[in-house]
Amino acid sequence: MKVILVDDERLALIGLRKSLEKEVSGIEIIATYMNPTEAMAGIMEHRPDVVFLDIHMPEMDGMDLGRQIQALTPGIEIIFVTSYDQYAVHAFELQALDYVMKPIQKDRLKQTVSRVQEKLSVKREQRSKDTNVPLICCFNQIHFKLPGKDVQVAKWRTSKAQELFAYLLHHRNQTIHRSVLLEMLWPELEEDKTVHQLYTAMYHVRQTLKAYNMDMITIQSGHLEAGYKLELGEAQLDSEQWEQEIRQWKVVDVSTVHAYEQALYLYKGTYLGNYEYMWAEPERERLRYLWLYHMRQLSLYYQQQGLGEKVIESTRRIQHMLPDEEESYFILMKLYDDMHNDLGVEEQYRLLTTRMEHDLEIPISENISEWYQDWKLGLTKVRHNN
Image 1 (cartoon, rainbow, N blue to C red):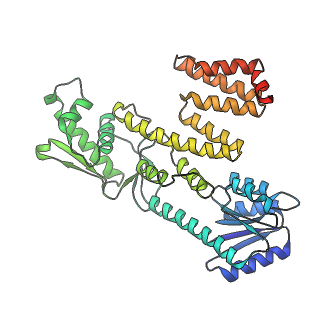
Image 2: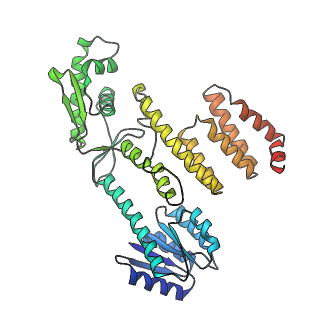
């Protein structure tokens, strides 16, 4: 575990260093800093696992430095150390892993380090799970990822071979009758005229898997090749991994919010979203709204904690992923109104108008139009003041 210590008091730095080295095994203190600017440069250079950070410093408030660390080096755990307990709430609003009072007690320090080690262990396990098995990436378009290798965009001999693989992958571990595949791929032709084309497309699928070293994926033929079943072997799907991860976190609170955020940001786009496969639409919708539900839970947590900027950030991400959802535009309009950001309100209303009325050719919801007209007349401000 690599650690950096930041405190403007030299004696405090020395004391914390000695305590950690005495009480904790497997710890490497790679640097200590008294100057926050130098500390940020050191954190960028060394990329530690954990930063122990004093809050009350003269040049830069530790909270501000914590925000910089999270913005520039996400994933680094922060533990605040201070003599002033009134900062505790703000520390956890920044998703700090822990908050320790000076003078630091031996048992309290051990408890903190135990939490860090547990968190890092979960991260290592997740990274190991992600990197030690072949991965089929299904968000947006099909990619292959072998352990220790870069992601490879799958290139198919024909669009029919691509869709054939995608359909069998979608229905993995199920035997799909030949007639179903023929009807899906060549609906305009009679079955006896397309059987050879199916055999050829299947040959191209198998050759493509072999070319990308993904031949642990097998496609079994039924009796007289009447049907086909795809089996993954040791390979995994990123969409399945993501769903398993997000379902682990039932509630968003101080202890889970960081993991919740990481799980949500693993959703990298729509399931098979670059392909116009109507048969994939139910699964697209299911995963999309699973993500939306949890993203709204995270946004609600931010709102309850008074983290306006985080609410805006998460709502904008919803808007980016689901541009047809009116609610995200309306939420942002009201947030910007609360912040007296008139340009922000106008921008969101313009984006909503463009998306709904111009692109989709449907009217904006009446309650949003009425709210906007009231806002133009200054009536929303009157309500706030009352």
